[in-house]
Length: 170
Length: 406
Image (cartoon, rainbow over all chains, first blue to last red; front, side, top):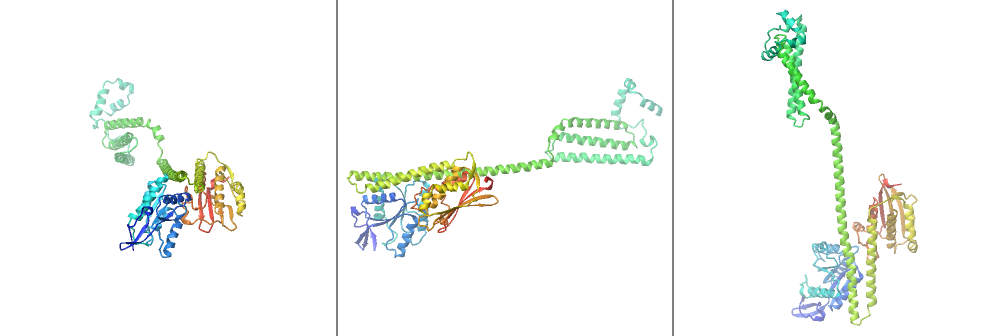
């Protein structure tokens, strides 16, 4: 099975197409794990994705420990539902975003999962710290909701449509 | 001849001054300095026994040799050391001793060759050098008196070195303190910019969604969005309040007063009595909590925050306990505030006192409380550390120097 770029429709731009040969055998939503401690921020991300009408499956966990537990739990269950993408806040209680990156990017079974940092911070030390820990991208949360919608739309399209994943569908 | 000489020697100074031959005689002294004419050798003048004569001769030669050695030593010392104090006087001393020695040599020679004229010239030279030395020395005496001895100099030097080292240590400590303060300030600015910006971004986004909803005539999620916005605004307001309190806690102490830590603990517990009773807390305050010289308001801030912390994490704890106790060591007095709550894993210990760090998602704190505890303790000359691990409760130790005991 291979993930390809065929069969996209505007209403579901971010859908993952699974093709065999030249045939699209199924389309499934882009699985996003949102790691965000703040309920309101998490709601805004969900609302923005909903407004962008992206075909995404959003799963929210509220801190770094929960994120790692969730990923490892999926692995333990056969790995069928690993996220296509992790949206990671930096400032969180218990294990913060940097610690999640440290853990995930050094775990041979998890490190290929793309991690996009989504933070309100524009501070250089946060950006550098994230990339040093092998974050795949760094996005700043816009203060304007329309921009938030655009940002998540573009991001979802990029990761679902244009980005070649490290491995075949899982 | 001998009679004439005796007569001439016996003449009074006044008679000699009037004698017109005196200037030519004086001139002869210098022109015929080595001329022994007119004098017998000393051996032949008087009744010298050989032991008495040799006693003089040998003694004079010994004095002369010693007096030769001393100027050589002084000269070589003065030449080698560039920092000799008063070098001119050293050279005068060397010349004076050399001249003295030479007069003794001539005294010995006179036993055999009566060179009285040369002897007189050398005595005159010795007198001149001696007086020159005296004249040079007198103004130096007050200066020399002020020069400390080598022991005193060493002592002063040692004191200066100690003083210098102390200043350097203080300077280094001040520099480190300043670096730490700068780092703290940087961290503070960063934290404030993030932690105050973040809720603003959230509120603005929520308002944008409500605007869109209003434009579309949609009202079904208004209540939810308003609740989220209100909660975010409240948290932001709490954060600003706490920052203000943190800033007050961090201002330098202007005055100290004796603070009974037992009373302060009782006040803090009393203030939270409803919560403590609701959760079924057992509170123990040791009777031996000391009195320390501190600031009452800051001690209260510390205790209020630590009691609040125990309450915050007591939900779900069977028979929650809170205990205030004290421990004395040789240098310190330590106050322990211990609870039997869920505890803090060791890996988080370096974070708990940092500004805006929260270890629990469910707690309503702003992440300022423990930073404030640390700041207030430090301002009063103390420090705070944590002894805890997951499932073992928390023990916050406030440590003050024993000198603050009253």
